[in-house]
Every structure is written in structure tokens, then in C-alpha cells.
Length: 605
Ligand code: M6R
Image (cartoon, rainbow, N blue to C red; front, side, top):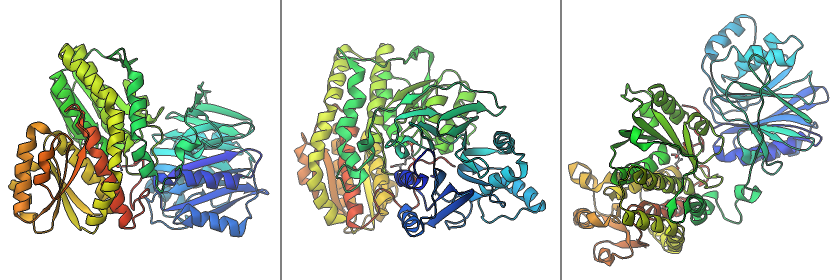
């Protein structure tokens, strides 16, 4: 999704903006641009394609001397990716420039109104209406003009605005799109997220919906749409630049796969004291709820599917899962006896936010499992448990996913204990297995070289299946998505027992079937399915527990993962599938960290 950045200080703005845009690349984009206040005018530079192209143009041009500017990476919504549609956009009179992330829902109506008044639009974007409105309402007072313009907008926005008449002054405003203010020494910033700013400052203010900031090099003022001042507190970021860089890895995705043992440790260890799960600040009376609903999108939804089985098994409460993009538009039944668990790495996914709001409006209590501190979902929920995975840059989530599963599992143990539904032996057994999970993940990563070989063997397949049962099936969903999103190879996850209800018709000689057989209770059942597909000529790559060597006589290739508690298996068995997707994509020459058409944070519908 679009990324925005703004800078005002004493040094040259363009290099700061360009390096910030490089760090925002991971969000997904198709064009980029910057605007800088130079010698009494606003100058813009834009490029379709990569930020590197923009940097090249800047290198050739260098006409952008100035200490205050704004920048943008655009993920096209209204109008194709092009230099004209790229942000920043400028008002017809050259007075204002703007960058915007979000969607202005009433833009068509405003555009018509302005065209009728003689305004000439250059781009097809919804954003351009904002900058032309600024021109229309300008009365010599920057703040009044911004507030009047914002009052006309419906939809979502994080905007950064500059005016030629006000050197060194930026305005930023937020409504349902992420935006933070970065506080430096003699310089200040705004950005869509901290990765763009972390090399400059670790002190930030999170802007909330309905808030507007005036940013100068030596001051920040925040107020609401009525112009009333708003008191905000500063937040200090604990991770450093290295966390947002590749540290010698070829791709962020591989770095993040390899970081999983540490991310799991950081998520689990602080929450286990004297053999007990301690979820500080989680003040929930579990006896109030007769149903749990887990809602999320993409991989976070798959983590929710694992969570459903684990919570239901331990807590004996009915648990449902539903895709947030479906739930938000369904006339569903929910009341105050329902606990809704919302799962999101970014905390900014538009569909998940909308589903959360729908659930709250029906009286449900919302518990969010989120990675990004201070994100929209963290703010909107009644309760939050953070996954401490650190920044995740690759579009394909890996450590985000496994830490979500870890938190859902910890929540299940904690809740089952509160409800008096877990025996002390099982409680201790699970906590001790949980504590060992980082080490199990580390050992699973030893499969790296073997998975690479298998990826080389199978990378040219055009279509494949992932099969498994129960928890294995949830991991199939995630393994299949990983492969699809970064290698563009068609794959489907199938509950193994469903094969004979249709899909087996697609099994033909040479078809690759990845069979997950880590669910010991159902091992023989899945082996029957392996035999059925093998009888029709399929090649089978099986993932099984190291304790289960029977698999060798059933499959063509085998990956053995370390044994653990049966409810924790999803955390280890997904790791070889992440590596498989990564290496297959690599052998196929794909842009692994920035797959085509995808964005890291899906902040629009
Ligand atoms: O930030 P979120 O966890 O809310 O994102 C949800 C999905 O967009 C995300 O998991 C997506 O499916 C990933 N690309 C999967 O790798």
C-alpha cells in the first residue's frame, strides 16, 4: 500500500525523503515521487516503477535544493501506475503539494464540483481533489485551509501537505490510515511507519484518527478538526536500524524465516513466570463468553485456524473462524457473550478493522493479537496481546505468522486455566513444550539445505497440492499461500479427506502433492490419502515428525521436523514450507520480497 514521508529540518530534504522511500518499498508500490520547497517554489520529481529509478532521476537533475519536503510510494487504486498519477500532486496554481495514502470515497462528486468551477485536473487520482480543494479554500491561513479541506473529505487518509507560502512547515492528518510523527533534534518528520524514520529517530508520536499535526523543524502542534489542541505522549522505539535491514541475507524473507527462533523467544519468554503463563494486563473474565470468533485476513486468518483448534481443544468453548473481508459484509449474529479475537501483523488491514468495528457494534469484546505497537487495530480493540516479532519487511509473512500461532496457543492455555478446564499435568506439559519451541524452530531451520535441494527438483511445477488433516490442514493453507504469493505457482490446500470428493480427478502422473503428516493421531488416515494419490502417479513430498520414520516407505521425498506437543506442531511444520516457497521463488527468478500486485499492509479495501 502507499507509503508517505515528510521532512523539515536543516539538511537537504531530498536524500532524506529518498532513503525513507527505499525503506517504505516493502509496503508494495508501483510508482514514487518527492516534492521539495526550493527557492520560493515547490519542485516535484516522479517516476513510474522503482524508487531506484526516482533516485537515478534525482542524480541527473539535482535541482531540488531545499530543507523541507514530502515523498510517496504509490500503490495504484484510482488510475494506472504512471508518472502523472504518481504522488505528490500539486494544486493548479502550484501553491500546495500533497501526498496521500487511503481512498477518498466522495472524490467523484468533489472533482465534478471543481471542474464546474474551472479547475483543470492532471491526474486520474482521487488524491488530486484534496490539493485542488486546498487551493480553493486558501485564505492566507494554512491551518484554516487544511481544516476546511479535511471537513469535505469522506473515506480514509493519511496526508502530508506543503504550501509554497509557508517555508519549513508541513501539515499531516490522519483518518483510518496509519501515520506517525518522528521527533528529531532540529528536524522533524512524518511517515506511514517507523521503518522509514528509524535511521533518524526512535522517538515518535502516534497520530490518531481525526488528528492534524503542524510540523516545523523545532516544534510539533497537534489538534483536532475543530482546531482544539490535543495532548499526546511520545513513544520510544526499542529496535534499531539493523532490525529493518537485511544483515547480509539476500532477502528480508530469508532473514525473517531465520529470525523465527528469536522472535518466538521474545514472544514467549516474558510471558512465562515460574512455569505459569502470565498475560499482564489481560483483564478478561473468560466465564462471560459462550463463543469465540476469530477473524483476520490472509496468513493471519490461517494462524486463526490453528488458534481455533487449540482454543477449542483446551477451553471447550465453541470457536469459529471467518475471513474478515467476508464477516464485515455478513448479517451475522453476535452479542456481548462473544469474544472476538482479531489477528493482524500490521494492525492496519482495512478489512480486519472493518470486521472489528462490526463486532464491537454488536456488543462483543475484542481481543487483538497484533505485532505493530500503536497500530489502528491495537487502538480499537478492548484488549491487546502483542507478538514481539520485531519489524517484518518481506510481503510474505513468516515470523509474524509463527508468533501469532504462539500467542494464540498461550492465550488458549491461559484461558483454559482461568476456566478450570486444563489438568495441572497438561498445563505443565504444554508450558514446558512452549518454552522449548524456539529451540525446535532452530532445529527445523537445519532443514535449509535439504529444502533447497527439493525446491530445485520441483521448482518447474505448474500446479501442486498441499494435503493434511486438522492442524496439518491449517498449515497446508498457509504453506500453499506462501508458495502462491511469492513464486506465482498455482497451488491448492486440501483437507486430505476431501480429495476423493473431487480433487483427486486432477491427480495425474508427475503431479506434486505435499503431504503434511505431523498430526500423529491421523497419520494412518493421511497415509491412505498418500497411497491414493501415488496410485494415480503423483509425486509425494511428505513433512512428518522425526519420531515417525514409517513415512519413508510411503513418500518420494521426506522432510522430518522435530517432535513437540501435538498442539504446537503447526509452529514447526510451517517452517519447511516457508523455506520451500522461498527457494522455489528464487529458482524461478521471482522478486521475493516484493511480489507482483501485492502490498505488505493492505490498508484499503
Ligand atoms: O497485517 P495483517 O496480518 O493484517 O495482514 C493480513 C494479510 O494481508 C497477510 O497475512 C497476507 O496474506 C500476507 N501477504 C501473507 O504472507
